[in-house]
Length: 229
Length: 39
Image 1 (cartoon, chains in turn cyan, orange):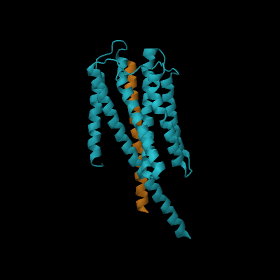
Image 2 (cartoon, one colour):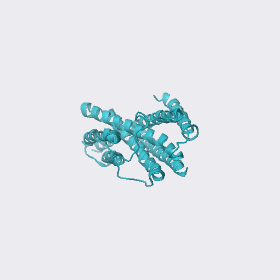
Image 3 (cartoon, chains in turn brown, orange):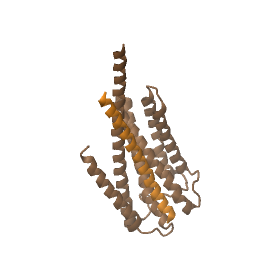
Image 4 (cartoon, each protein chain N blue to C red):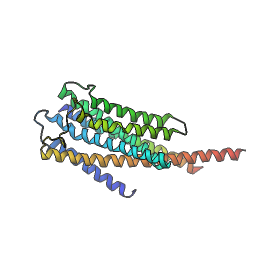
């Protein structure tokens, strides 16, 4: 993976640049919303990537609870942290789109509120990991992550089952879309997914390295104490 | 148009800030590894 990583990073950078070009130049301007609709090409892929990363966190947390595998725990931490970054982007780009279209930055609409709750759950997860010194922290965090994941289908289906202010899905929702818009959307979706996976992998490697250093430091101080006796 | 640029710029500001934070954490770890190796 170490040899392949730089190649994947370059390919992802190219894909992200191509996605930016497609979103800003090639995709046609939407007739009712105008250029502000182009925020969609970053907002939706960010939401998708956050969802995928939180799902990875869910699977890794289950694996940790079943097998007590520390690598799964490291992956859970990494995916939650990177997922929060993408979810933050969703919560930042959404209101920037809403201001010119709805005339307000924020409303306590079901989908918006559930997305904020999702973000708060994973921020709590990260705070727990950061500040709790209990040996049970990974177990408690894994249980929190599993319950937190339950919010993802609620966020996704909230616009299907409830009357919300959030726009209904155009793709897969029965609406028609210009093929150039669809192309720009899917390029950005793939680019953001690859970018999220690469950042998560880097964070995972960092977490594994951090744990190895902490273990070595603990061993070192133990040997020092023994040596002084 | 300014809303569009604000959204795109903020997206990359957040990503770059996070990647910068990761790089800083990695450098700190490298230093700790070097110090451990000296012992």
